[in-house]
Amino acid sequence: MQPTQDNIVILVVLGMATTFLLVTSFILFSIRNQNKLLKQRQDFQEAQIKHQKELLHAVIESQEAERKRIGQDLHDDVGTTISGLRLLIEMFKPADENDSAYNEFKRSTKTIIDKIVKDVRNISHNLSPTTLRYYGLAAAITEHCTIINQSGKLEIVIENEAEEALAKLDMPAATAIYRVLEELINNTIKHSGASKAQIDIKTFANNLAIKYMDNGKGLTTVPAGAKKGMGMQNIESRLLNINAKFDIAAYDSKGFAIDINYPLV
Image (tube, rainbow, N blue to C red; front, side, top):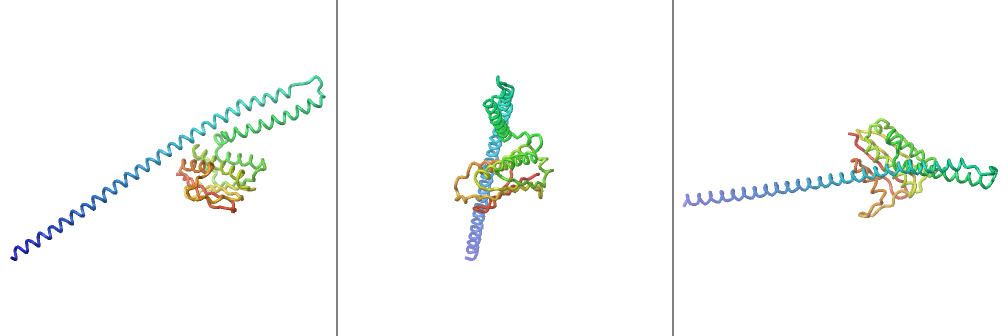
């Protein structure tokens, strides 16, 4: 009987061992398949994000090209034609050069034409800022803020401690940052009721740090899942396109502030 019992014990042990090995193998196989599926899912998501970024980049590039074309057409065609009209009015001389009605017409017409020329120049600049292309981001920001300051709509102070870093930015990054600041300034003027705004530009740990703030009423708290405004969507899209991050720091009657970080390497 003893050998038979020993054989039964051996068979039981072998059965348990076999079962353990099968269960372990099944668990390892399941884990391996789960990891494989997870990796495939991650690869698919990364491919989707890459594709979305490529589409976004193409859209933004197309927008900038169209802006440039329209801006040049306004400056070259419309601006030149209006300037020619002003010259014709200036050259025209009536029979009676002391005619007060004509002189008043000439004066008021020249004033209106000068305003149109200035407006066309400003629109052309906003569509395709030549200063950005030829003199860099720092000069473009300064010029745009100077125009805003002179208009009396908003007082903007610039603190720039990153001249060298701004000068080294490639055109896509410089254009994106310029457009973001332009959008922020426009939002401040249109919606915030602010009287002052400030732009601080610095560098730290191989990052370009830009802080924009105003003393307006701030953002209204948006419910979770609510659709964002077009302006904020444009800002997010442009920053995403250059792999920049941002953080909005203030809400509701406390002014508005946004921190933008762009990696320089």
